Length: 351
Image (cartoon, rainbow, N blue to C red; front, top):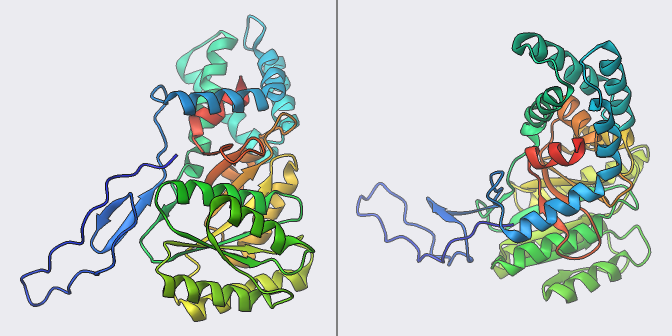
């Protein structure tokens, strides 16, 4: 969900001769003017203040993580906090794909807080765990901001089957519905029919697309950024080919795309997003490491949290490679993509 404001006219020219005149470009709907830049943040509601639409999505997230939450909740069914409880909790967290470093961190914090507070009931321990997990996940809670650059160039990467192109379609909907003009770039020339798939999303969202049949991905990206600047677009979304981090020649191609984008706009790409499948567990963490090392990630989109995913990998990411999570997807529908809130996720994961 975005937080938007009414369109504002450009500020009047400054009287002082030493102040540069403001940009004459008309800003898109939403955001707030900071100097000559339009900042459009994604709103993250505070707990307990969610509108009905957000609460409905939170309920769906809880249902999606229900199996994991049920498994962890059974640990707190006893009447005392003892070593057996801590051992069962360790097993449950590892089974939820939280990973060894994050699990050890959470258990160490729990033991310390229990000792300091003197709590003796497992339910109180569970509440402490929710708060501790929320604190661990907090660095991942960061809004996506567009408008400080025009166009804001967003490069999207991911492995095959992670839901990358679908996520681009959902993100395009979020942006275009709230007044930001979007240009799509079909730089996935590696996969058959990828250009056509992105074209379908462009048609559904009524946005323009730059594509070349059999073209070089870097060239398509360069043309898209140049076109975005010439047409006054607010956002250029670049869909790159899905690949495994072990495919070194393809990872080099991603680096080339980034370098070529910088020739069209030296400040771009302004965002480098990785789409990861919530079902892949610790493999997701390995992907974050590899793509971050290659491209310098600025954000993540977590997909397919639809009932089978365990979700604990976000704790592992937060502990070992805290790249912000901009969005979470819990289904295939256009509206089933929402901003990440640390406390909401902790409550959904722990039940």
